[in-house]
Structure formats: C-alpha cells, structure tokens
Image (tube, rainbow, N blue to C red):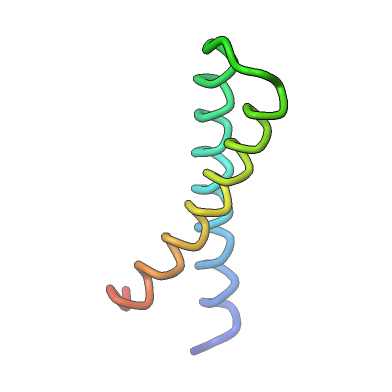
Length: 62
C-alpha cells in the first residue's frame, strides 16, 4: 500500500477518534462523575475509536 494512502487512513482515523473523544468528554462533564473518571473514559473511548476504525478498514479495504 502506498505510503500516502496509509497516512491518509491514519489521519482519518485519528480525526474520527478525536471527535468521538470530544463528544464523550462533553457528555461526561455533564454527568456527576469525578474528574478522573471523565478523563479515563474519554481517553479509552478515543483509543477504542481509533483502533476500531483501523480494524474496520482492514476488513472493508476501501
């Protein structure tokens, strides 16, 4: 796979994961949780979004 195409896919997954993380952060800040729980959950959602997007691309092969 060309290097430019791989970088585009990684960038797309990174942007998607960041947006999902920001949405999660906003939702969790509204809920009455501790700050550590909010930060931990936001980081976990961001990481999970990145890897699930990467895994999906290997199956779809777009």
